[in-house]
Image 1 (cartoon, rainbow, N blue to C red):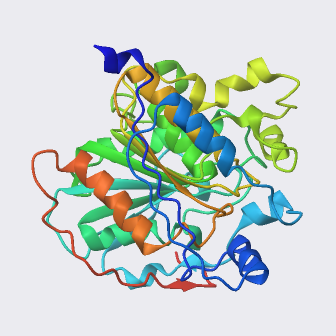
Image 2: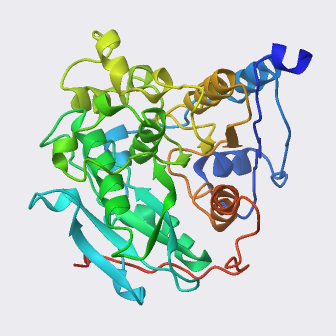
Length: 370
């Protein structure tokens, strides 16, 4: 079959310079020209040559010096958990009093049990962040479309080095499956959605499906599976050894050593090195002016996934000039398209009966709920 003689690619490129969404790069363009920005959408499949050309042409230099660790810390606000009618908060998923090894279950405003599950993993460069962080605001919108959202915390690098973070999120998935009946959850298909470092952990969960040596079963629910059936990664990290100079230190903190000097050893924490033929579907979104996690990480990851699996498992959406965690990415359009992807995994033979066209704003607060 001639089609399979090429690398299998199925990428979605939506390259937008929207006049309605303000980004630093767009403001720079506006200062240089009185012409309005242009919305550009390119969809379809890209073979390896076209993909490489697009990637090279879309690479951009950041217009300012960025303190990566300060930028990664993100919002100091939290999702206001009181807005959700039904929720269970601060549930330990292992035998620990550590509040980072807990999860919050937020039930949907529409739908019936057993509820299909979206697991949310926060970013923060593995050294900061919180499962109640406002950075997960957009993911909570899935509760308006019939999904339970389970926000999972994990130990940060100030108290534990790799692979503790992976052990934690795998223990959380096992807990969810083992207690599905108690919390009225559907354990059959679990999709995990992460941003930045959370996207890295989401991808690691998927690439290590079924690999017993990649989890610590002593953390509980050893007989339950930690496998995930789908992944969403927004501006996630796929290769910790290939981060730029301004952000490589977050990977050094994760591993406890210089990952460039010990790249072979550090490869153990990069999902791009674990892709197998059984890798589940993944949807990625990345900005082309991301100076913290360059967008070609997602391009190379998607390429590797589709090559190894031999099918269209990876889809990628790029935003021209968007930076790391840019509001141009964290919008309702991308939430809606991401949920379209999740629906295809959760509802293989029919449409999601609980999808509605309108989304309500997710409220945030300066006070952390408990």
